[in-house]
Length: 301
Ligand SMILES: *[C@@H]1O[C@H](CO)[C@@H](O)[C@H](O)[C@H]1NC(C)=O
Ligand SMILES: *[C@@H]1O[C@H](CO)[C@@H](O)[C@H](O)[C@H]1NC(C)=O
Image (cartoon, rainbow, N blue to C red; front, side, top):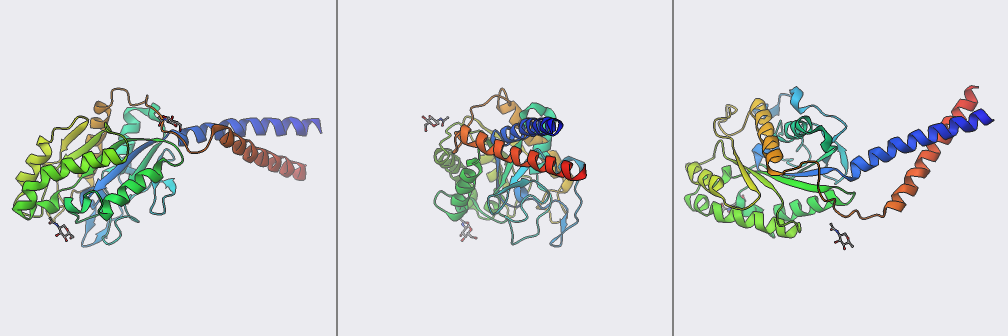
């Protein structure tokens, strides 16, 4: 009997310690919003509307990289990250997983990463204007991502190919982009939120250089630009290959690490439930698991 009690206590405490560590990691996750159009959603390895299914080692899943799915539940992230978000096209490899794994490789102490995919292929900047459905969806998903704790560390943005078709769109791109970023930061109540955007590698029209110039020339504090020009494209001449997406993910990660002076230290967002409530819940679940273990042990003996 005494032995059983001892085993019970041992199992209970080790289980409690382990799950409280996991909970704390989860509660303090580093959230990144992925938005833009197809090259953010990911078309690497997609040829003729079919993904080749190849996942490079840099994009492999692991328990410390999560994804907010379309039903706004957290789950282990896996490629294609946007499969249930950008649903009208075949999704392949984008920069998100390679980014998350690179950040964790550069700064392992950062803990859990939570990715929030929001990109939709073929969309122009006007559709991301405040009040439009893509914009609202982005803000809603960002807010949903915070409910169980964590901090939005940065927005990763890759968009503009659709705005290279008409000269008027290309010429108003800079102002539209700036307004989008300012509105988003205001609506997320985070005026200095880091944004890392991509200068286009390709465009759908003739006015690519005008859009690129607007992207590279955008002057806003804590907004950085990485340049995708020169990265290899799929035969369609528009989409980054899987290998290019891996490289872009790495570029995003290096830029993020440069943008924040100390990637590990940050202010935690308020969590909706009190800590004592969480602790109680944790104790109860550990209690049940320990009891179950003991009952099974007893049955075996
Ligand atoms: C943006 O895309 C939408 C939907 O495809 C279209 O209706 C709209 O005219 C486009 N706006 C501009 C400025 O190109
Ligand atoms: C957390 O919530 C409290 C009370 O609701 C508020 O006073 C405080 O400013 C919040 N902190 C952050 C970092 O949002």
